[in-house]
Length: 216
Image (cartoon, rainbow, N blue to C red):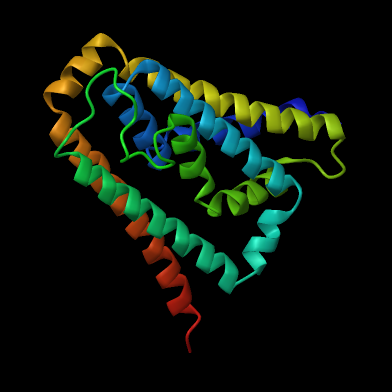
């Protein structure tokens, strides 16, 4: 059984999905440019840890359970949407008193003042990840794949997640990026908050559309 192409396919799917801007990118950007490089890297580590959790649960079949749970799955996604809106609202509030360069994370961060928890909670708040990875694994992972392959898949996705978001943190924490962030911090914080709110509203609208489609 040639499993290397399957791993490469999985790698390509994941890195392309990670590159699409979303809540994770907003959190890493906020921590890196507005606080410090270390904060951005800690947020990236939190995202990688949460990614590992979702991938492990998907391989265990929890994604399929969620997809078939109906109302529970919709409720979890609505809770995640509400969480993103709440975080965005807090970011908008904090725009009036932006975080100084080098300071500790302010209360606008999800997870309190910990960048690691900010990344962890933001990623864990989206149960759609489990369903997504379950679908990807069903497509990519060969039947009766050995245990080492599943372990390699979990490690690959986790390390790629860490690598990508760490790269984002390194770029946005450069003196050039932080200088412009400090100049435009109020507006950028407002943009970050608005993006989080829009992402939350989009997720809520997806759930609404799915529920409407089930009505006679």
